[in-house]
Length: 340
Image (cartoon, one colour):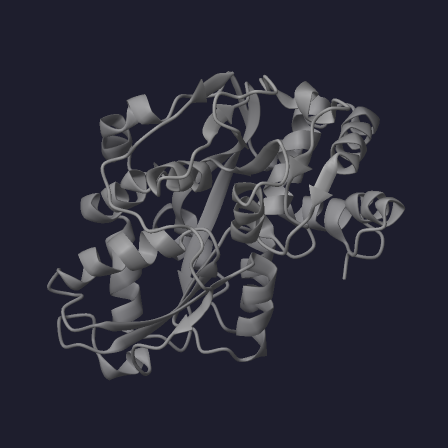
């Protein structure tokens, strides 16, 4: 278990930013990704809003490819964003934390089916881990997952039927209790107990952390980078990285309607400058050289597992998160929580 307060050398704004669209331009087909301007409709899940708007987009606009490129941005819960793009929301560049949410827009014909083979690193632009945010000084002495099912601990985590982050949280909880899937009953029993202790299930990871920052709960299960971002924004909370946790892989893609401008932006995310911007905002870079520069800031959990170790998202999405028959839907229904 790692417990710490951490500061990164980057300026961040407070988390309580309004979500939605900040209109800055038209369609990306007005430019060519070569410094000739144009615009990009960027659609993403809630947590990287600060990273994109305060760091990554300005850094890209300082490059030759990004000069005079304008952005329209939309940040919200992963599932909502995926369905919105499927329904026609303008999108040139999409960044979501769950493979099934990307698959939805692939199946709609909006993203190339072979994106995982054609994009660098399969489109995974950064990683994180599921971690705990606790009150300053950790007054409840929350050290690991067992503490989240104590009678005196109140948990905050989002609703897994709207939030991609919540699904990572649930699978981290399930994986550590089930010996990485070997004992399903033990894993599900633990998740049931943890969700019984959960006092609020917000729609998105960002909303959930803001609920915790507003004073509810003793521990917030969240992306490591969200907790780091809150600390950098001046919020008083401590970070606990449990010994057993899951690696979070998020995927960025360009849509079939986009042009070289959006592709140039995606390519920029894998450059040293792009990866450094992610690292400075608390995300674990996928570029090995950049990761080495920040290795002291990102300790390796003792037992780190992946979604592939639990069967992969194609299997997990159906078995656990089908809103009518999934294993987690059954638990939520038993607790009176909506899954639609």
